[in-house]
Image (cartoon, rainbow, N blue to C red):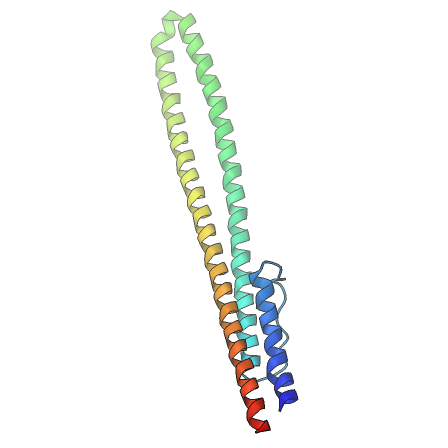
Length: 178
């Protein structure tokens, strides 16, 4: 019974525990699945774990996609910022021309006011983009914390189950001797 118990319950359970510990401690290879060699409860546990890992990989892929979108947003923000710098430089030049040319002062001031309104609109757009980027980063952080908590909870449950099975094995072994 001891050897049968060891090969049917303990060894597969130790593989599951080792896989969960490796992932929970940050050393695990998230691209691998557990090898399932049985169709019993331990095989089912391994199957659910593999499904969990598949979904975790999907979440990580989605996070990478969101990061790529974030990179594009940052590029757009950089272009808008450069455009604002160019427009600010032009506005400065127009202001200098306005001072030099008293005859066209009224017309030049109107042009400056229009450029300032456009610049203000673009700055508001940049602020909206910044808030959106910040919101995305907050969501990524929350998703990462949720995934970490879930993996830790699964590892704890499996360790508790392993300890219970170990205790049952000890009790079963003692009962057979008596």
